[in-house]
Length: 165
Image (cartoon, rainbow, N blue to C red):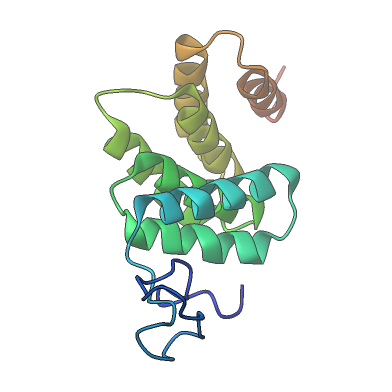
């Protein structure tokens, strides 16, 4: 999204009573720069992730989630969102890299959704054994995860037929 920067005026700076807010840089009465606020990162991540789910505004979603990860690089959900947006954009190698990182950051906890995302990226890269492993792990964590079931079924259908000779 053009103009999205960490210095973007978002939160008002303290001002004297009766003063009128002015644009950023307009003095003490103006709005100050945004600090690396966890809520700001959360909002950026959530907007980006929703856009990835509906496959809309993906370039802007990538910019938003990239800023969220820059603000909180060890937040596994944000790194997962970054990987999933990259996946939706067809950047499967980048997606797999970030999705692997998200799974590692989340340990010792585990997320069926993260493993599903990782398995889907592996599948698009042709890494079928890794994809199967991640998708099976997603289903071990949540046996009713329909998307993981569908991805695993699709992956099984892509297997070459055994030779009958």
